[in-house]
Image 1 (cartoon, rainbow, N blue to C red):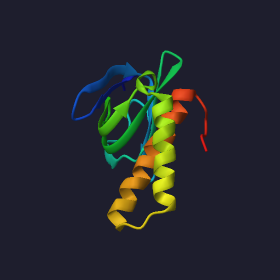
Image 2 (image 1 turned 30 degrees about the vertical axis):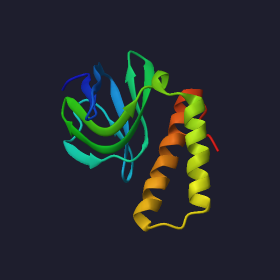
Image 3 (image 1 turned 90 degrees about the horizontal axis):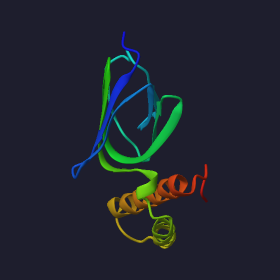
Length: 139
């Protein structure tokens, strides 16, 4: 059994990450998935949240939103609609986006599909703020 796992995170626009890591945690649709080398193969849909991975005793984090994770014994492939490193996030812009999304949802009068789009925007802006500021929970 391998002692590390190959992690790759890609979006339609770019390869965000390709590293050999000790462990990975991804936000699956039914909760957080912890992935270690030798993990049982699986495919899961992602929800908006923080993907974290340990590498040499250091934990790194990324925002992921939408897409899937595929796991084999020695590889975790994340195919995300959006993936961002904390240093790529503009906290002021995320704060404005969060405020706009909150206002939109408070006075919402559109379709269910439009509501889900606005809710997803709010989720992404909250996670962006968490990563950009290092805060565990932004309200």
